[in-house]
Image 1: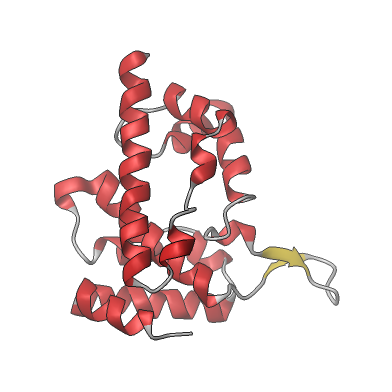
Image 2: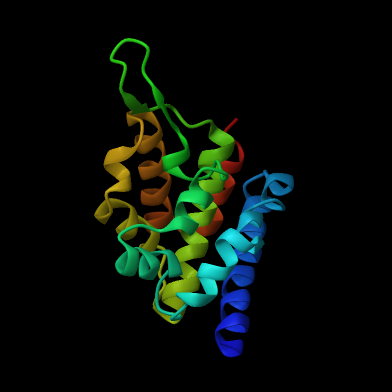
Length: 174
């Protein structure tokens, strides 16, 4: 358990530091300093240690065992860089629907996607990895259309032109 405690702590801290670095490059450095702080609270950290395996997010392992992830439910409701945060009841349809994500949170989401790919893929990471993840997971279909198109265009640019050019381009978007 002690080993898992420190490995999980290292993993989330490494990921967070990558996001902070990327957020500064994207012009939202101050926002990046607050990225994923909820992961250090007991509600998310304890299950993170319990379900840590070093191969994928502990929330996936918790979900496999319980059918849901209490840590993820907590996390997504407190962190605006997650797609799932951006749902509200449409006043016309009376159903939960995705709403447009403000650019500053799309930027953080972009930084988060790259950092997560680098953290879990390690030396297998390429600039195409965040794009591949995005298009193969249900999240792309859950997002507001405009937000999804923006994120997809940024990830395609990353894949085709690399970090330096993509970060410079995104930094100038307000």
